[in-house]
Length: 272
Image (tube, helix red, strand yellow):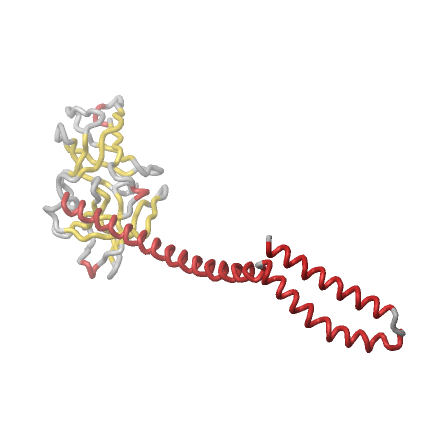
């Protein structure tokens, strides 16, 4: 209230000065007007500036501008802090991903502890209608050779068909040119699982013995025959049985345990 009263008094003073000047100027000869205006400006301008500063001081306007500057500084500091937090979060996510990968490696190593294995990440995949291969980031320098078995926690992936110093190409069991010697887990009957065109999740089990009893849901695993895969690695389960007129031609559809479209981490068995 006090500040408002002071501001009002100053306004009255300024108005009075302006009115006096107007009266003086209206009674002065036009030829001398410019000279008088110049004098008036020199006299009045400093007074106006001083009164304006005093008025702002009284009304707190200077505090307002100081607050704006303070807010700008605080805003810059907040932006910098936010930037550092974002960087920390990205580093945390990276470490978390690395920990998850290491956890998968440890789980795989524990499950297949009877084998000496080399872990690797999938860096490329070609899971199309005709070619179903993957490329991993381990090669000759890590002891990888052709025909070595590749696995994951769920089961069999395939085997190495090509190697460079730092990478290896793996033909998966769902490749149409792949033939995997296998057995039914319950009956122990020998079969062959073949990859299918336009199929990324199923195999075709053929050469089923005529006397064999096949049951949906039965587990299928490697037989150890054929010289590529060691015995007892899980392949998948029987999802369908297709009977034909000739019993020797019947076949089964095997749903693979591995999701080949989501492969990220594998193990290569190097001591089979």
